[in-house]
Amino acid sequence: MKKSGLLFYFLPVIILSLLCAANSFAAIKTYTHTLKHTYVKYQSPEDARIEAVSIAGLKVLEKAAAYLENMPIIKKNNVDKNIILALASKIFKVKIVSEKEYSTGKETGIQISVKTNTDTSTLERKLKKLSSDK
Image 1: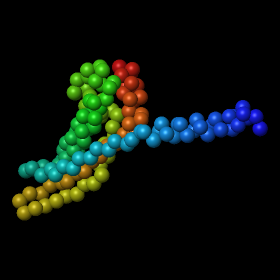
Image 2: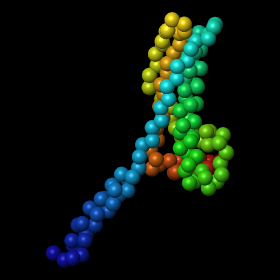
Image 3: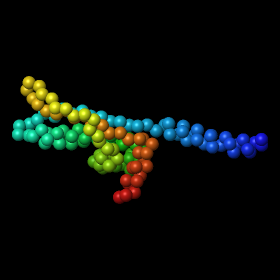
Image 4: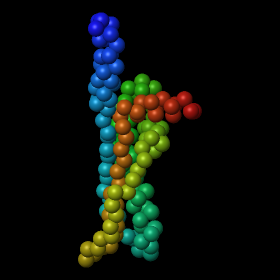
């Protein structure tokens, strides 16, 4: 077998190995937040749930926005914190992990846990796409 024939058979294996190694550097960033929200006077449980989900979602997006703030593309363009939070809300999807009502002797409320995650290998591409959509 010729040397060029060996190269023909092993080149795809080498390329696939390099691609797999490059993908192994990608990581999934996950952020979570748990919020205990006490019912206030004259507030229905559904209204309290909506408020708790909104607050918990905002808190977890603020954590994700802090990560975005340190990315080179954001630092280079000197992006305002409010814009970074808006970008985070477009990139990250917030999911409710758990919710349960609680009651102590003095208060009743709801506890909500939310999370968001993203693949860091696609994050910069998403940011570039959003900046080109302006």
